[in-house]
Image (tube, rainbow, N blue to C red; front, side, top):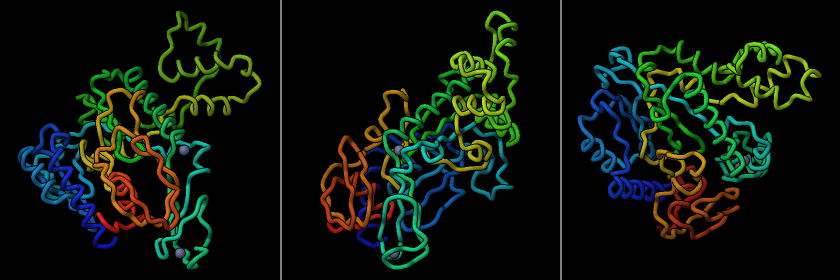
Length: 362
Ligand SMILES: [Zn+2]
Ligand SMILES: [Zn+2]
């Protein structure tokens, strides 16, 4: 990334944290958390600790980092190396990302990029860059309203598992937009706080329907009487009832797969099982998009292309190497192919923070 773009990004992020430090989601038990951040143009710095919210916010304004992280775990000694920290417990966290939800639209908007000569193109990456012959091309995931809506559907499925199957109260589920293309659910339920990675893996596998075997007889469920069926059993009964005419012609295995596809929440199990991870901190800017990781109160009304846009709308001049169309704050931008444009700060950050362009004047 060139120096003028780095300077621009640092200035915008610093200005944001200076003006909007009230948005930063201060974690509970702040002194027992491990913090980390990635500076623009630098590598991850971890094992930090802050005594109080004021100290944390002052550091954000001073460093203007690209990304800020906080542990879901609480530790006796958060600044020491992992095996010396003294793990005391960790909130249960789920991550659902648009990239991992299979949607047909992906084939239309995935694209590739050559970091050597900055050429890009739509579709699957070719073996070599057609311009400079470099073989090191990057396949880029992009998202549209269709895949963002599909991601919401999986969030709702997750909430249904947590409340219906695990008895988590709705108030205990804190849902956040990740600042990029997904959602994080932080579960404030003491029952899970001391859970080890194996137990967290069992919860994650259940929700994903991994290794699920169902006894698929609609007769059974009727005879268990009074409509009492729970968990995956209930989901499978509902599915079979709704597809009654098709049932009976299908193989059990195929039907099981269909039931799982129609009901499982595709959470990232590696996130849920890691009890020493640092997570993007609520109320901070995503380092690749400039969008806010923010609390989502109602998933249906949340607009991931509008609500997390918190940076300014003043126009800046940018050279964009390549970008397909995208929508932010109700405005459609692009597509761009080696274009010089005047666009709002939030759109300029969205592109340049990903390395897709350079600031010419800002
Ligand atoms: Zn190239
Ligand atoms: Zn899409």
